[in-house]
Image (tube, rainbow, N blue to C red; front, side, top):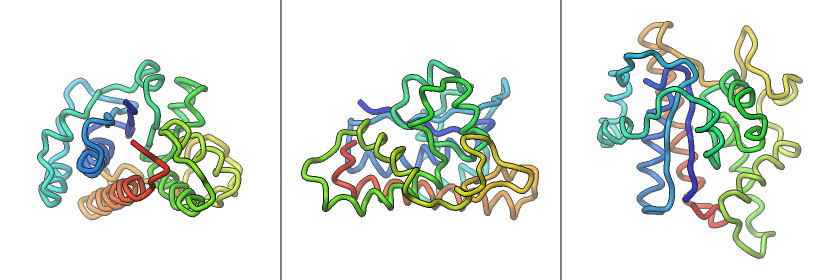
Length: 208
């Protein structure tokens, strides 16, 4: 059974929201065939789910327990190694995943990066005679990194984190930037997760 792990910093906002949306969107089409978890790179001892995230889930009629049950807490090498696909909120967390396990690099993407690459993968369906299993599909996404130009791909940072002014593939933490910025971040996370769910559901070459 494939395992998807979504990563942010504190595991209270971006990653549980994205994981819940992915879980709800994919389980309806592929019941019992995958596990979606969320984790953080710097989780506090007391970390309740962000109230704004709960409200976002309510708007989408997703019970908050869907996000709560996904939360694995602190990201570690063991969780990284069990994941078939790792989705991070930003490039800084993508770099942390690679530090925990260099072998995870080919299957680690930011949420926005995965969306861009899945859109490219969809264009390859007609040329593929046979469906790909989930690990092979993730491997293809990694291969497409070399051929599909994603925003910011020419910055030369490789697998490193975002710079001072951020990266186009980042969805940055909005907690300390005021209510409007926080709301904008949650909207961006929701949009990316919904797009990923749609692309995975529609892509018959990505059987999950």
